Amino acid sequence: MIMIPGVIRSRILRAIAIAEEKKGSPPNTSEVFVCFNQEFFALSTQGWMTAFLGNLYREDLFYADKLFTFWSMDLEGATDKKTYEKFSVRF
Image (cartoon, rainbow, N blue to C red; front, top):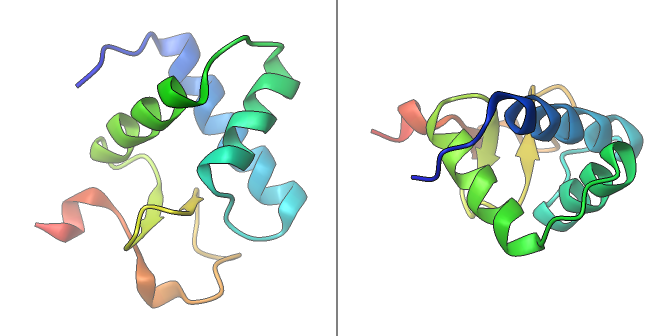
């Protein structure tokens, strides 16, 4: 696991919410990355964003589909709600 400072953690969660709101459905990692960089003027790499999303998912902060392709803060916009779950549900 990677240590993630609180300010980055809250911005990533906000970027997921913003991307989901703009798109109207759960965003994938690339869409979260683009939204994060546009909203917060961050210069990050997509590799780091992928690692951060995996770590935050383990903390049960949002939902993911079974293939870890799409991320969602809530399941309202998900097309198939049965395929989204939190980390603690998997075990």
